[in-house]
Length: 130
Image (cartoon, rainbow, N blue to C red; front, top):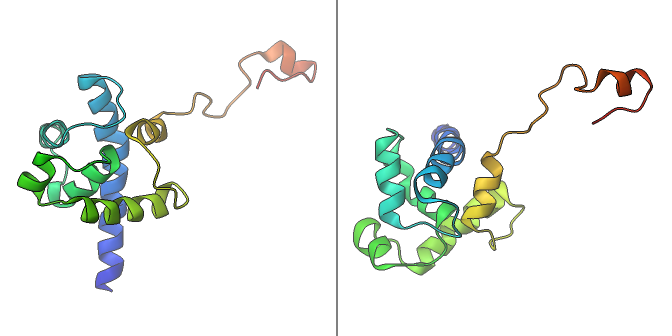
């Protein structure tokens, strides 16, 4: 039961780190292959996200150990690789070669949300614009 609750909380944290933190990181610091720990932490605190799972946010948006990953979060490269493996299994079909750009791509909204075709005449003739 506790494992089920932990997985639910972790999944919620993933969702907020991808859909809320990611776009804010891009807005503040531009697109990048990885962000610094201080950028991730400062943005998460500004957005009032749950920082209990902050190491996972670092694993999402960072792939190399730095001085701050060790000093602030006590994440060495081996532990960071384990977290990245967990993230990769959950989001990227087990491929740990993802970058922050791949995670940011997950946050992009799809353009078409259903409803009628944007070009009704083509749709009327059977040539949908989708």
